[in-house]
Length: 254
Image 1 (cartoon, one colour):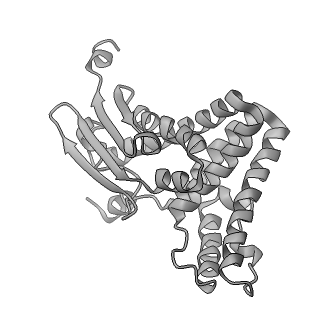
Image 2: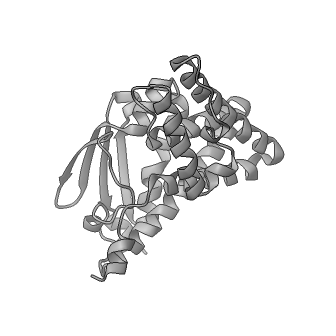
């Protein structure tokens, strides 16, 4: 494999993944609710920023939060500015002697939670559908890219190549057991950076919309016959349980 191929197969940064998510959910919200949707996106991001500013100020009454430590809407649409703002944000927390600075995984979960809350609280089921569509489009695009990653290494988009060419790295914030069966992949997450954050923040009813859509969308983008059974959720049962498999009936009836 060439050096260029090695570089292409590195996991995407969480800054890039966060920006991709925000672009897709923003597009879906704006398509569904026009200017009102845009107002709600701004409202959600302000709510996130207010939460972080309060956290830092509570840590030390004398520390003044720089605006650079807070996210604008535009910051969240580009990987570079997600990263640059996060560096200020993490530095601000360190200066405030916050013992456990918020990770970029938590930032993505928190921003998603606050924006989703603003939309769903205003539009109910219609808001839920707009969010779910955005997550689906985000996941499907990533799934197609996972298939391309496999192809760049000369591998087909089969069941067994899904996880080796997955696009997102896993930190210690995820605890995963993976069992490869002959006809399926079984995964159990006993810790999830996203689900655990939504649980901690009391955002479970909003975060679950992401959980319900993301893996089926990833699988569909990777291969149209790749199915996911997601029968347990961290936000409901305390762990996530998945079964990934190729649907042979679909393959036989193309």
